[in-house]
Length: 437
Ligand SMILES: C=C(O[C@@H]1C=C(C(=O)O)C=C[C@H]1O)C(=O)O
Image (cartoon, rainbow, N blue to C red; front, side):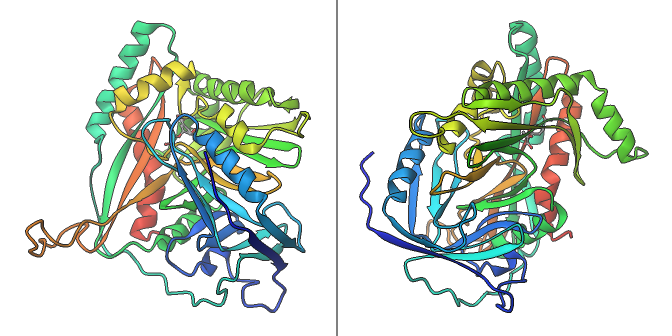
């Protein structure tokens, strides 16, 4: 890909105590417009404005993103007096799940405010206005739901079909399927409203926003800091039920052969792909339980040390190309399972279930899997084709988002339970839209 870049100046400075931006939660510093976010438990990065942007698609999307970012990084004059991962210029990135269809996006914001280990900083690229007023957050009004491209009953059918395919096939052990749900809001959607509510209710998840894809994911695909890499693999899920407390649910999850098998596939797929880049890799033998308010997951935290290559360690975006998709969002064997997904779902995942996160010019970064998320869609035209005013209704003058959720299907999956699982996974975004705190 031929790129032409101009020289860019990036400046990072610590935000000192006494500055109004020192103590406010990061998400509250977003002025409005198209927010960029990667925030967990109050730390992370928020950004706005656009100094550079890449859209790409196809099987080489990771390689395109990698070469674009490496080349762009060479065009920066960087003046960074803080020097932590995430300082200096960063790209927020969200990659499509599949080669076809779907666009992958990288955005380098003009302004980033970050916090790590209690240190807060601001990075500016060029000479943006950093005193911009923070517009009040605008609630989305009433929310109404309608079927997406794959309805709930369509999903139930897809699960039955996948079970049949796997029983006939014998080789296929897991296929991850998802469905979507459309939400229309009576008022225009202020993306910050969703982000604030998600972060308030899911502080242990990474609240992300990149080019209209917003969510709070509990799953860390790959984090790199120097030579250290980390991943949190999730697969195997239970959700709250009348009469069961969290400890009983956790025990049920840990002792469920079905969930343990689903989890083992996902951990193995991540570890096998990551091992190729590492001189050391620690994979715990037993999963833990991650407790969230809508679901509990089996979780394995994998840690590794990158091996040296002649050019240093392999870059984060290249490693993402190798580890994505894991069996947590694809299936087992992954290549064959992923081939089956579009024919079973009949839906374009877009960037749902793809890697989402950020990268700096030193190659440090964090990429989660874009789960528990919504894609902002263009608002419907307020006029009919003949020019008359459209009848009032959902989407007219308001906003529209497409929510996604899925789950791993194995040969003994029960369709009704799988439907209940995805409904539980849709809750975080639904409640955030509805303003439930
Ligand atoms: C596919 C999703 O979640 C994934 C599937 C899980 C499962 O099948 O148990 C659990 C966590 C995620 O890895 C989703 O949230 O949409």
